[in-house]
Length: 304
Length: 235
View 1 (tube, one colour):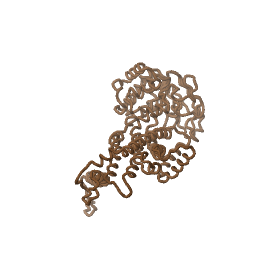
View 2 (tube, chains in turn red, orange):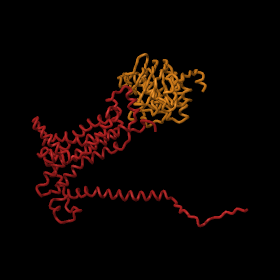
View 3 (cartoon, rainbow over the protein chains, first blue to last red):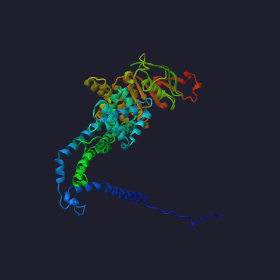
Protein backbone atom coordinates (compact mmCIF):
# COMPACT_ATOMS: atom_id res chain seq x y z
CA UNK A 1 0.00 0.00 0.00
CA UNK A 2 1.55 3.15 -1.07
CA UNK A 3 1.79 5.74 1.57
CA UNK A 4 0.90 9.21 0.63
CA UNK A 5 1.75 12.33 2.44
CA UNK A 6 -1.27 14.42 3.00
CA UNK A 7 -0.65 18.03 3.66
CA UNK A 8 -3.47 19.44 5.67
CA UNK A 9 -3.71 22.94 4.44
CA UNK A 10 -6.43 23.79 6.87
CA UNK A 11 -4.11 23.24 9.84
CA UNK A 12 -3.84 26.25 12.07
CA UNK A 13 -0.99 28.42 11.02
CA UNK A 14 1.26 30.34 13.28
CA UNK A 15 2.06 33.89 12.41
CA UNK A 16 5.78 34.28 12.49
CA UNK A 17 6.93 37.50 14.06
CA UNK A 18 10.28 38.45 12.70
CA UNK A 19 12.34 40.34 15.18
CA UNK A 20 9.63 40.08 17.79
CA UNK A 21 12.26 40.43 20.50
CA UNK A 22 13.41 43.78 19.29
CA UNK A 23 9.82 44.88 18.76
CA UNK A 24 8.98 44.01 22.37
CA UNK A 25 12.04 45.86 23.47
CA UNK A 26 11.10 48.92 21.46
CA UNK A 27 7.68 48.99 23.06
CA UNK A 28 9.12 48.50 26.52
CA UNK A 29 11.46 51.42 25.89
CA UNK A 30 8.63 53.61 24.59
CA UNK A 31 6.53 52.91 27.66
CA UNK A 32 9.41 53.50 30.02
CA UNK A 33 10.25 56.81 28.34
CA UNK A 34 6.59 57.78 28.49
CA UNK A 35 6.35 57.13 32.21
CA UNK A 36 9.76 58.60 32.93
CA UNK A 37 8.76 61.80 31.15
CA UNK A 38 5.48 61.86 33.01
CA UNK A 39 7.30 61.36 36.30
CA UNK A 40 9.89 64.00 35.46
CA UNK A 41 7.20 66.56 34.68
CA UNK A 42 5.32 65.61 37.82
CA UNK A 43 8.34 66.05 40.07
CA UNK A 44 10.03 68.97 38.32
CA UNK A 45 7.09 71.32 37.86
CA UNK A 46 6.82 72.34 41.54
CA UNK A 47 10.53 73.30 41.86
CA UNK A 48 10.32 75.11 38.53
CA UNK A 49 7.34 77.07 39.79
CA UNK A 50 9.30 77.84 42.94
CA UNK A 51 12.23 79.16 40.90
CA UNK A 52 9.90 81.32 38.79
CA UNK A 53 8.13 82.73 41.83
CA UNK A 54 11.38 83.36 43.71
CA UNK A 55 12.54 85.62 40.87
CA UNK A 56 9.42 87.82 41.05
CA UNK A 57 8.70 90.83 43.18
CA UNK A 58 5.71 90.72 45.52
CA UNK A 59 3.89 93.15 43.24
CA UNK A 60 4.32 90.90 40.21
CA UNK A 61 3.22 87.81 42.15
CA UNK A 62 -0.01 89.48 43.19
CA UNK A 63 -0.73 90.97 39.78
CA UNK A 64 -2.88 88.95 37.40
CA UNK A 65 -0.15 88.13 34.86
CA UNK A 66 0.90 84.74 33.51
CA UNK A 67 2.18 82.91 36.63
CA UNK A 68 4.59 80.81 34.50
CA UNK A 69 6.58 83.72 33.19
CA UNK A 70 8.81 86.30 34.87
CA UNK A 71 8.32 89.73 33.31
CA UNK A 72 10.64 91.67 35.63
CA UNK A 73 13.18 89.20 37.07
CA UNK A 74 14.75 90.28 40.36
CA UNK A 75 17.12 88.73 42.87
CA UNK A 76 15.73 90.90 45.65
CA UNK A 77 14.23 87.91 47.48
CA UNK A 78 17.59 86.11 47.52
CA UNK A 79 19.45 89.24 48.59
CA UNK A 80 17.00 89.90 51.37
CA UNK A 81 17.07 86.37 52.77
CA UNK A 82 20.80 85.90 52.49
CA UNK A 83 21.45 89.13 54.35
CA UNK A 84 18.81 88.50 57.00
CA UNK A 85 20.38 87.40 60.26
CA UNK A 86 17.24 85.54 61.17
CA UNK A 87 17.28 83.40 58.03
CA UNK A 88 20.98 82.69 58.43
CA UNK A 89 20.29 81.70 62.04
CA UNK A 90 17.67 79.16 60.84
CA UNK A 91 20.16 77.85 58.32
CA UNK A 92 22.85 77.55 60.98
CA UNK A 93 20.48 75.80 63.40
CA UNK A 94 19.41 73.35 60.69
CA UNK A 95 23.01 72.61 59.75
CA UNK A 96 24.02 72.14 63.38
CA UNK A 97 21.07 69.87 64.16
CA UNK A 98 21.57 67.81 60.99
CA UNK A 99 25.30 67.31 61.44
CA UNK A 100 24.87 66.27 65.07
CA UNK A 101 21.91 64.01 64.29
CA UNK A 102 23.78 62.29 61.45
CA UNK A 103 26.78 61.77 63.72
CA UNK A 104 24.71 60.46 66.62
CA UNK A 105 22.68 58.22 64.29
CA UNK A 106 25.75 56.69 62.69
CA UNK A 107 27.52 56.20 66.02
CA UNK A 108 24.50 54.28 67.29
CA UNK A 109 23.16 52.47 64.27
CA UNK A 110 26.38 51.16 62.71
CA UNK A 111 27.59 49.26 65.80
CA UNK A 112 23.98 48.23 66.54
CA UNK A 113 23.55 46.86 63.03
CA UNK A 114 26.89 45.07 63.21
CA UNK A 115 25.94 43.45 66.50
CA UNK A 116 22.50 42.45 65.25
CA UNK A 117 23.76 41.17 61.90
CA UNK A 118 26.92 39.40 62.99
CA UNK A 119 27.26 38.76 66.71
CA UNK A 120 24.66 36.09 67.06
CA UNK A 121 23.27 36.37 70.56
CA UNK A 122 20.07 35.32 72.24
CA UNK A 123 17.16 37.32 70.85
CA UNK A 124 19.18 39.17 68.21
CA UNK A 125 16.72 38.33 65.41
CA UNK A 126 13.73 39.48 67.46
CA UNK A 127 15.57 42.61 68.45
CA UNK A 128 16.36 43.39 64.80
CA UNK A 129 12.68 43.15 63.91
CA UNK A 130 11.80 45.19 66.97
CA UNK A 131 14.15 47.97 65.88
CA UNK A 132 12.40 48.17 62.54
CA UNK A 133 8.94 48.08 64.13
CA UNK A 134 9.75 51.19 66.14
CA UNK A 135 10.30 53.00 62.85
CA UNK A 136 6.73 52.23 61.85
CA UNK A 137 5.29 54.36 64.65
CA UNK A 138 4.62 57.75 63.03
CA UNK A 139 5.96 60.96 64.54
CA UNK A 140 2.43 62.37 64.66
CA UNK A 141 1.72 59.73 67.29
CA UNK A 142 4.93 60.27 69.22
CA UNK A 143 5.20 64.01 69.58
CA UNK A 144 2.62 64.38 72.37
CA UNK A 145 4.06 61.74 74.71
CA UNK A 146 7.57 63.00 73.93
CA UNK A 147 6.54 66.54 74.76
CA UNK A 148 5.03 65.39 78.06
CA UNK A 149 8.21 63.46 78.82
CA UNK A 150 10.45 66.46 78.25
CA UNK A 151 8.12 68.67 80.28
CA UNK A 152 8.18 66.17 83.15
CA UNK A 153 11.95 65.87 82.84
CA UNK A 154 12.19 69.66 83.08
CA UNK A 155 9.98 69.70 86.18
CA UNK A 156 11.97 66.95 87.87
CA UNK A 157 15.51 68.03 87.12
CA UNK A 158 15.15 71.68 86.32
CA UNK A 159 16.90 71.08 82.99
CA UNK A 160 14.79 72.79 80.37
CA UNK A 161 14.87 70.95 77.05
CA UNK A 162 11.76 72.29 75.40
CA UNK A 163 12.36 75.30 73.16
CA UNK A 164 16.06 74.53 72.87
CA UNK A 165 17.47 73.51 69.49
CA UNK A 166 19.38 70.63 71.06
CA UNK A 167 16.16 68.90 72.11
CA UNK A 168 15.97 67.93 68.44
CA UNK A 169 19.18 65.93 68.86
CA UNK A 170 17.30 63.64 71.21
CA UNK A 171 14.08 63.55 69.21
CA UNK A 172 15.30 63.08 65.62
CA UNK A 173 17.27 59.89 66.30
CA UNK A 174 13.98 58.20 67.21
CA UNK A 175 13.24 58.46 63.48
CA UNK A 176 16.69 58.00 62.00
CA UNK A 177 18.31 55.33 64.19
CA UNK A 178 15.79 52.51 63.56
CA UNK A 179 15.76 52.99 59.81
CA UNK A 180 19.52 53.42 59.45
CA UNK A 181 20.09 50.38 61.66
CA UNK A 182 17.76 48.44 59.43
CA UNK A 183 19.55 49.54 56.24
CA UNK A 184 22.93 48.70 57.74
CA UNK A 185 21.74 45.28 58.97
CA UNK A 186 20.85 44.52 55.35
CA UNK A 187 24.25 45.67 54.08
CA UNK A 188 26.22 43.88 56.75
CA UNK A 189 24.23 40.70 56.23
CA UNK A 190 25.18 40.75 52.54
CA UNK A 191 28.89 40.65 53.39
CA UNK A 192 30.11 37.04 53.19
CA UNK A 193 30.53 35.41 56.57
CA UNK A 194 34.02 34.20 55.62
CA UNK A 195 35.22 37.80 55.53
CA UNK A 196 34.75 38.35 59.24
CA UNK A 197 35.92 34.83 59.99
CA UNK A 198 39.12 35.58 58.07
CA UNK A 199 39.49 38.81 60.03
CA UNK A 200 38.94 37.04 63.34
CA UNK A 201 41.53 34.40 62.46
CA UNK A 202 43.89 37.20 61.39
CA UNK A 203 43.58 38.45 64.95
CA UNK A 204 41.06 41.26 64.64
CA UNK A 205 38.72 42.03 67.52
CA UNK A 206 35.02 42.63 66.86
CA UNK A 207 35.65 46.35 66.90
CA UNK A 208 38.56 46.07 64.47
CA UNK A 209 36.48 43.82 62.22
CA UNK A 210 33.82 46.52 62.17
CA UNK A 211 36.09 49.48 61.60
CA UNK A 212 38.70 47.96 59.29
CA UNK A 213 36.63 45.47 57.27
CA UNK A 214 32.89 46.06 57.54
CA UNK A 215 32.72 49.84 57.37
CA UNK A 216 34.97 50.15 54.28
CA UNK A 217 33.24 47.26 52.54
CA UNK A 218 29.73 48.53 53.37
CA UNK A 219 30.61 52.12 52.49
CA UNK A 220 27.82 52.46 49.87
CA UNK A 221 25.31 51.34 52.49
CA UNK A 222 26.83 53.68 55.04
CA UNK A 223 26.51 56.59 52.64
CA UNK A 224 22.91 55.65 51.84
CA UNK A 225 22.13 55.64 55.56
CA UNK A 226 23.95 58.93 56.07
CA UNK A 227 22.00 60.58 53.25
CA UNK A 228 18.78 59.26 54.72
CA UNK A 229 19.58 60.53 58.21
CA UNK A 230 20.59 63.90 56.82
CA UNK A 231 17.46 64.24 54.66
CA UNK A 232 15.18 63.30 57.53
CA UNK A 233 16.74 65.72 59.99
CA UNK A 234 17.05 68.52 57.44
CA UNK A 235 13.45 68.28 56.29
CA UNK A 236 11.75 67.37 59.57
CA UNK A 237 8.86 69.72 60.22
CA UNK A 238 6.57 68.43 62.93
CA UNK A 239 9.06 67.95 65.75
CA UNK A 240 10.74 71.37 65.48
CA UNK A 241 7.32 72.97 65.15
CA UNK A 242 6.25 71.38 68.43
CA UNK A 243 9.47 71.51 70.44
CA UNK A 244 10.89 74.89 69.47
CA UNK A 245 9.15 78.25 69.45
CA UNK A 246 11.62 81.12 69.92
CA UNK A 247 12.94 82.45 66.61
CA UNK A 248 16.58 81.96 67.64
CA UNK A 249 15.95 78.24 68.24
CA UNK A 250 14.06 77.49 65.04
CA UNK A 251 15.32 75.36 62.16
CA UNK A 252 14.85 76.25 58.51
CA UNK A 253 11.55 74.58 57.52
CA UNK A 254 9.70 75.91 60.55
CA UNK A 255 11.53 79.23 60.50
CA UNK A 256 10.44 79.99 56.95
CA UNK A 257 6.82 79.26 57.71
CA UNK A 258 6.62 81.09 61.03
CA UNK A 259 8.49 84.23 60.06
CA UNK A 260 7.50 84.70 56.42
CA UNK A 261 3.79 84.15 56.96
CA UNK A 262 2.49 87.02 58.98
CA UNK A 263 -1.13 86.44 59.86
CA UNK A 264 -2.81 85.98 56.51
CA UNK A 265 -0.06 87.72 54.58
CA UNK A 266 2.03 85.24 52.65
CA UNK A 267 5.34 86.56 51.42
CA UNK A 268 5.38 84.07 48.57
CA UNK A 269 8.52 85.33 46.88
CA UNK A 270 10.62 84.89 50.02
CA UNK A 271 8.88 81.66 51.04
CA UNK A 272 9.78 80.11 47.69
CA UNK A 273 13.32 81.49 47.85
CA UNK A 274 13.76 80.16 51.37
CA UNK A 275 12.43 76.76 50.38
CA UNK A 276 14.75 76.62 47.37
CA UNK A 277 17.77 77.62 49.43
CA UNK A 278 16.73 75.08 52.02
CA UNK A 279 16.50 72.34 49.40
CA UNK A 280 19.98 73.09 48.08
CA UNK A 281 22.18 71.30 50.68
CA UNK A 282 20.52 67.88 50.28
CA UNK A 283 20.71 68.30 46.49
CA UNK A 284 24.42 69.11 46.63
CA UNK A 285 25.07 66.16 48.94
CA UNK A 286 23.17 63.80 46.65
CA UNK A 287 25.08 65.06 43.63
CA UNK A 288 28.45 64.50 45.29
CA UNK A 289 27.77 61.16 46.90
CA UNK A 290 25.82 59.54 44.08
CA UNK A 291 28.89 57.78 42.66
CA UNK A 292 29.75 56.28 46.04
CA UNK A 293 26.15 55.43 46.55
CA UNK A 294 26.01 53.33 43.42
CA UNK A 295 29.49 51.82 43.54
CA UNK A 296 29.57 48.21 44.66
CA UNK A 297 32.64 47.76 46.79
CA UNK A 298 32.14 44.09 47.51
CA UNK A 299 33.23 43.10 43.99
CA UNK A 300 36.13 40.67 44.21
CA UNK A 301 35.65 39.83 47.86
CA UNK A 302 34.68 36.27 47.17
CA UNK A 303 34.28 34.08 44.10
CA UNK A 304 32.84 35.44 40.91
CA UNK B 1 54.70 24.15 63.84
CA UNK B 2 52.70 21.80 65.97
CA UNK B 3 50.76 18.62 66.06
CA UNK B 4 46.98 18.62 66.26
CA UNK B 5 45.01 16.20 68.35
CA UNK B 6 41.27 15.67 68.50
CA UNK B 7 39.94 13.67 71.45
CA UNK B 8 36.31 12.50 71.27
CA UNK B 9 35.26 15.77 69.70
CA UNK B 10 31.50 16.20 69.45
CA UNK B 11 29.50 18.93 67.74
CA UNK B 12 25.79 19.12 68.36
CA UNK B 13 23.37 21.66 66.89
CA UNK B 14 20.22 21.44 69.01
CA UNK B 15 19.16 17.83 68.31
CA UNK B 16 21.43 17.20 65.33
CA UNK B 17 24.81 15.68 65.98
CA UNK B 18 27.07 16.96 63.22
CA UNK B 19 30.23 15.34 64.53
CA UNK B 20 30.12 12.31 66.80
CA UNK B 21 33.18 11.81 68.92
CA UNK B 22 36.14 12.11 66.56
CA UNK B 23 39.59 10.90 67.54
CA UNK B 24 42.38 12.08 65.31
CA UNK B 25 46.12 12.59 65.67
CA UNK B 26 47.86 14.80 63.17
CA UNK B 27 51.61 14.81 63.48
CA UNK B 28 53.85 17.85 63.19
CA UNK B 29 54.59 18.77 59.51
CA UNK B 30 51.93 16.33 58.33
CA UNK B 31 49.50 17.06 55.48
CA UNK B 32 46.19 15.45 56.37
CA UNK B 33 43.18 15.58 54.10
CA UNK B 34 39.67 15.12 55.44
CA UNK B 35 37.56 13.71 52.64
CA UNK B 36 33.93 12.73 52.56
CA UNK B 37 30.56 13.56 51.08
CA UNK B 38 28.64 16.77 51.82
CA UNK B 39 27.26 16.97 55.31
CA UNK B 40 29.61 14.40 56.85
CA UNK B 41 31.01 16.97 59.24
CA UNK B 42 34.44 17.52 57.70
CA UNK B 43 34.06 21.27 57.38
CA UNK B 44 32.60 21.47 60.88
CA UNK B 45 35.63 19.57 62.18
CA UNK B 46 37.97 22.00 60.45
CA UNK B 47 36.04 24.99 61.77
CA UNK B 48 36.24 23.55 65.28
CA UNK B 49 40.03 23.28 64.94
CA UNK B 50 40.02 26.91 63.77
CA UNK B 51 37.87 27.96 66.70
CA UNK B 52 35.10 29.30 64.49
CA UNK B 53 32.72 26.73 65.99
CA UNK B 54 32.51 25.85 69.65
CA UNK B 55 32.89 22.20 70.47
CA UNK B 56 30.10 20.51 72.38
CA UNK B 57 32.29 17.87 73.97
CA UNK B 58 35.83 16.49 73.84
CA UNK B 59 39.19 18.20 73.50
CA UNK B 60 41.16 19.82 70.72
CA UNK B 61 44.87 20.21 71.24
CA UNK B 62 47.30 22.22 69.18
CA UNK B 63 50.95 21.73 70.05
CA UNK B 64 49.95 19.84 73.16
CA UNK B 65 47.79 22.65 74.59
CA UNK B 66 44.05 22.23 74.93
CA UNK B 67 42.51 25.07 72.90
CA UNK B 68 38.80 24.39 73.50
CA UNK B 69 38.21 27.83 74.93
CA UNK B 70 40.99 29.68 73.14
CA UNK B 71 39.71 32.26 70.63
CA UNK B 72 40.74 31.76 66.96
CA UNK B 73 43.25 34.61 66.97
CA UNK B 74 45.21 33.04 69.83
CA UNK B 75 45.35 29.56 68.29
CA UNK B 76 48.06 30.59 65.86
CA UNK B 77 46.36 29.03 62.86
CA UNK B 78 45.69 30.33 59.36
CA UNK B 79 42.73 29.39 57.22
CA UNK B 80 42.12 29.43 53.48
CA UNK B 81 38.46 29.59 52.53
CA UNK B 82 36.63 28.17 49.53
CA UNK B 83 35.52 31.63 48.38
CA UNK B 84 38.92 33.19 49.19
CA UNK B 85 37.46 35.74 51.66
CA UNK B 86 39.86 38.48 50.58
CA UNK B 87 39.26 41.96 51.93
CA UNK B 88 37.92 43.72 48.81
CA UNK B 89 39.03 47.23 49.73
CA UNK B 90 42.65 46.27 50.35
CA UNK B 91 45.42 45.56 47.89
CA UNK B 92 47.01 42.13 47.73
CA UNK B 93 49.88 43.30 49.93
CA UNK B 94 47.47 44.82 52.46
CA UNK B 95 45.39 41.66 52.44
CA UNK B 96 48.45 39.56 53.16
CA UNK B 97 49.79 41.88 55.84
CA UNK B 98 46.50 42.53 57.67
CA UNK B 99 47.13 39.97 60.40
CA UNK B 100 50.73 41.09 60.87
CA UNK B 101 49.72 44.74 61.04
CA UNK B 102 47.14 43.94 63.72
CA UNK B 103 49.90 42.26 65.72
CA UNK B 104 52.07 45.37 65.17
CA UNK B 105 54.96 43.65 63.44
CA UNK B 106 57.72 45.99 62.29
CA UNK B 107 57.24 47.27 58.74
CA UNK B 108 60.48 45.82 57.45
CA UNK B 109 59.58 42.38 58.76
CA UNK B 110 56.14 42.58 57.14
CA UNK B 111 57.69 43.55 53.82
CA UNK B 112 60.18 40.71 53.93
CA UNK B 113 57.48 38.19 54.65
CA UNK B 114 55.20 39.50 51.90
CA UNK B 115 58.03 39.47 49.36
CA UNK B 116 58.95 35.94 50.33
CA UNK B 117 55.39 34.63 50.15
CA UNK B 118 54.69 36.50 46.90
CA UNK B 119 57.79 34.97 45.32
CA UNK B 120 56.81 31.52 46.53
CA UNK B 121 53.32 31.89 45.04
CA UNK B 122 54.43 33.72 41.92
CA UNK B 123 52.29 36.79 42.61
CA UNK B 124 55.07 39.37 42.95
CA UNK B 125 53.66 41.60 40.21
CA UNK B 126 50.16 41.48 41.71
CA UNK B 127 50.87 42.87 45.18
CA UNK B 128 49.50 46.34 44.41
CA UNK B 129 46.29 45.14 42.82
CA UNK B 130 42.87 44.88 44.41
CA UNK B 131 41.14 41.47 44.57
CA UNK B 132 38.60 42.42 41.91
CA UNK B 133 41.43 42.83 39.41
CA UNK B 134 42.54 39.22 39.92
CA UNK B 135 41.41 35.94 38.39
CA UNK B 136 40.06 33.12 40.54
CA UNK B 137 43.38 31.29 40.64
CA UNK B 138 45.28 34.45 41.52
CA UNK B 139 42.80 35.23 44.32
CA UNK B 140 43.31 31.79 45.77
CA UNK B 141 47.08 32.30 45.67
CA UNK B 142 46.63 35.56 47.58
CA UNK B 143 44.47 33.77 50.12
CA UNK B 144 47.27 31.24 50.55
CA UNK B 145 49.78 34.05 50.77
CA UNK B 146 47.78 35.59 53.57
CA UNK B 147 48.07 32.30 55.43
CA UNK B 148 51.79 31.83 54.71
CA UNK B 149 52.97 35.27 55.88
CA UNK B 150 51.52 34.64 59.31
CA UNK B 151 53.85 31.64 59.68
CA UNK B 152 51.25 29.84 61.81
CA UNK B 153 51.43 26.54 63.64
CA UNK B 154 48.70 25.00 61.47
CA UNK B 155 47.27 25.65 58.00
CA UNK B 156 43.59 24.95 57.55
CA UNK B 157 42.17 24.65 54.04
CA UNK B 158 38.40 24.51 53.54
CA UNK B 159 37.78 23.20 50.01
CA UNK B 160 40.10 25.85 48.59
CA UNK B 161 40.00 24.64 44.99
CA UNK B 162 36.28 24.00 44.58
CA UNK B 163 35.67 27.31 42.80
CA UNK B 164 38.37 26.81 40.20
CA UNK B 165 38.09 25.10 36.82
CA UNK B 166 39.49 21.61 36.38
CA UNK B 167 42.77 22.63 34.75
CA UNK B 168 43.54 25.30 37.30
CA UNK B 169 42.63 22.94 40.10
CA UNK B 170 45.30 20.46 39.00
CA UNK B 171 47.83 23.27 38.75
CA UNK B 172 46.94 24.72 42.16
CA UNK B 173 47.14 21.26 43.72
CA UNK B 174 50.77 21.09 42.66
CA UNK B 175 51.33 24.59 44.00
CA UNK B 176 49.84 23.73 47.39
CA UNK B 177 51.96 20.61 47.59
CA UNK B 178 55.06 22.61 46.66
CA UNK B 179 54.31 25.22 49.30
CA UNK B 180 53.87 22.53 51.91
CA UNK B 181 57.18 20.93 50.94
CA UNK B 182 58.81 24.29 51.42
CA UNK B 183 57.21 25.54 54.65
CA UNK B 184 56.46 22.14 56.22
CA UNK B 185 53.59 23.56 58.27
CA UNK B 186 51.11 21.07 59.69
CA UNK B 187 48.14 21.15 57.35
CA UNK B 188 44.54 20.04 57.61
CA UNK B 189 42.78 20.14 54.26
CA UNK B 190 39.09 19.51 53.65
CA UNK B 191 37.78 18.41 50.28
CA UNK B 192 35.10 16.22 48.77
CA UNK B 193 37.33 15.47 45.78
CA UNK B 194 38.97 12.09 46.26
CA UNK B 195 41.64 12.67 43.62
CA UNK B 196 42.61 15.90 45.35
CA UNK B 197 42.79 14.01 48.63
CA UNK B 198 44.97 11.26 47.20
CA UNK B 199 47.37 13.57 45.40
CA UNK B 200 47.88 16.03 48.24
CA UNK B 201 47.82 14.07 51.44
CA UNK B 202 50.42 12.36 53.53
CA UNK B 203 47.43 10.74 55.14
CA UNK B 204 43.80 10.68 54.04
CA UNK B 205 41.04 10.62 56.60
CA UNK B 206 37.78 9.39 55.12
CA UNK B 207 34.78 10.63 57.02
CA UNK B 208 31.74 8.45 56.47
CA UNK B 209 28.37 9.98 56.05
CA UNK B 210 26.23 7.73 58.24
CA UNK B 211 22.54 8.00 57.69
CA UNK B 212 21.88 6.65 61.13
CA UNK B 213 24.83 7.61 63.23
CA UNK B 214 23.75 5.45 66.12
CA UNK B 215 24.63 2.27 64.27
CA UNK B 216 28.31 3.15 64.16
CA UNK B 217 30.56 3.18 67.16
CA UNK B 218 32.71 6.29 67.14
CA UNK B 219 35.88 4.57 66.02
CA UNK B 220 34.28 2.88 63.01
CA UNK B 221 33.28 6.21 61.50
CA UNK B 222 36.89 6.69 60.60
CA UNK B 223 39.04 4.85 58.18
CA UNK B 224 42.58 6.02 58.09
CA UNK B 225 44.57 5.34 54.99
CA UNK B 226 48.27 5.83 54.91
CA UNK B 227 49.50 6.62 51.46
CA UNK B 228 53.18 6.52 50.79
CA UNK B 229 54.81 9.54 49.25
CA UNK B 230 55.63 7.56 46.07
CA UNK B 231 51.99 6.75 45.42
CA UNK B 232 51.17 10.34 46.04
CA UNK B 233 53.68 11.69 43.55
CA UNK B 234 52.90 9.19 40.83
CA UNK B 235 49.23 10.11 40.54
